[in-house]
Image 1 (spheres, rainbow, N blue to C red):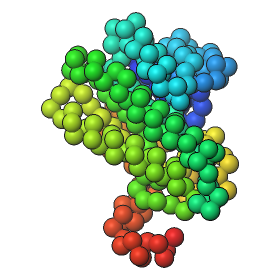
Image 2 (image 1 turned 60 degrees about the horizontal axis):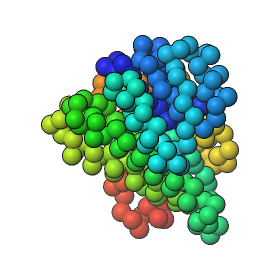
Image 3 (image 1 turned 90 degrees about the horizontal axis):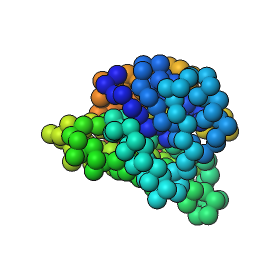
Length: 244
């Protein structure tokens, strides 16, 4: 792993906790950011002092940026930033409300993620090194029934990461977009809809860590759902809308 220090948001459970544990196992000092102090402390007790809990809420972007810059100054430069914090929610457009189903998703999945990815960007550019990773979703590939805010938020994140990658070409910085399918985490526990090719947590974390180690531009998994998504992008609108 080409990183000594890392920041991982949404690290109290699911993919974030799995990533924090796996990075710590590889000798990376991980600053694990999340809202739930007790979950972070349990993670530290499980994984050891290589994980440093930091209570932070990505919805408070000003405080988040300040916290990340304090960490960066204290450790002499963060090498790896993983914007993982995210929320879901299934709601058809006929029952969609701004206050309950749209604003909260955009606050976390878009504004929180964008703030995470750019908080240390000027310092990384100055040092000419660093790795930015965003955990998006296969749902970013096309609008899916009942996932209006979620699909849109992940599409925004994937596009933002692609733009960062293009803008930072030729520098010492790397940008990785990770687009998982369905993974067995607290985020998917309440999903009432079918979840084809549902993956267990550990294989999903394995795929993500491999992509980070290799500094891949894009990692989409599982391959079956990735293939369906890529083909779906090519289907004409009138055909797609009939199928879904």
